[in-house]
Image (cartoon, rainbow, N blue to C red; front, side):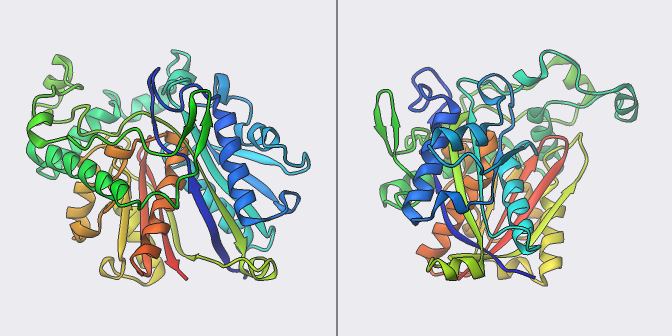
Length: 392
């Protein structure tokens, strides 16, 4: 079996999904094109040698409907013979792209693959691809009657099950901003961020971090998912989830250069990490956000490891209750959990988040001379990917 290694990983700065967002003026494929071009150029590889471009993108409609990785690759001026495909495993789309890229290389079917992701949530709104139609058939609805709920309600269900009150969620959210701000101020994101040229100039810093965030300020925000009907259905809920302790809708792109170890050595490129474990699994679609827990347990078991063996955990902060429930279930060290902040502070550009998290994970392992990192993401429908990487 071939060994798949990570040669490089970069991302754009994160922009707020608003009219004044730093990336809102860029077509999503133009944004991704810059990231792909930056990845290829800074590693000095011949783009004609890339075997495939596997792209995570969730809202594949409108400006993101035309196989965005393919359009971005051609927009970057790269060879037409290089193909691309688009992955939708919801929030874990580009993490799944990484899995598919690594698996293909390990099987000996390719030597160089770029796994990437993009989402312009200011230009293509979340959920717009449904076109106001019911995505569920009658048999599914019958199985899960009286019906599934939104992810925000699932976040409150998770909070209730794990005994997480409003203060715990807001404290975690404030910490995410504090950690991200500290990392940004210390220049810890500089190596992973590719400056992006926009109609308004070059941007190279995350727009989403709010250093002034406090628990007291977050406590003033109203819970956003409560309705009378849902309160009657779930009387046990405290309704603690707010816009402040949930991930931010964001524009962003990310890309990772994955090679066979043999090819990396042939090109005199230094492998920076290898893959030590993979998993993807499902859990309750009603709770929806809990699958990172069994996915982590499974990937650790497959790798013959314990949670204590992992130096750094990246668990996507879709909502504050997600990493906190994961931490309590696994008995993980809080200081190792998203130590540079997460999606509450940095934002969650759906299709790009998987590679964004792994990019931050890789650079943090290097900066701290650590060995193993674990990443997991909750995904709509009650799924999760989990990956363990080993710094080389």
